[in-house]
Image (tube, rainbow, N blue to C red; front, side):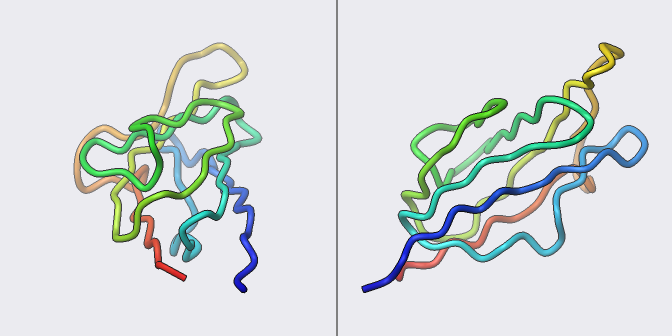
Length: 104
């Protein structure tokens, strides 16, 4: 029987971009995921298909992987110093990444 894994995905600020790790970790259905940054509150948006039950993952949320495939996300950080939001603007962008989800 497979063991589920929790993935803590750290998003980092690079200028005005919210950059996820490259490559993203490979995940399995029923794994859990959360996103965070030392620079502020992270939001992740899946504009098309999504690996979770919701299109958007907000700050501090833990979500469970439900769908297999490859899913493109857009990453944002609301800066903790109150100066605004940074992140994805348009393709190509370093503020996005593909999530590769496998069936176990």
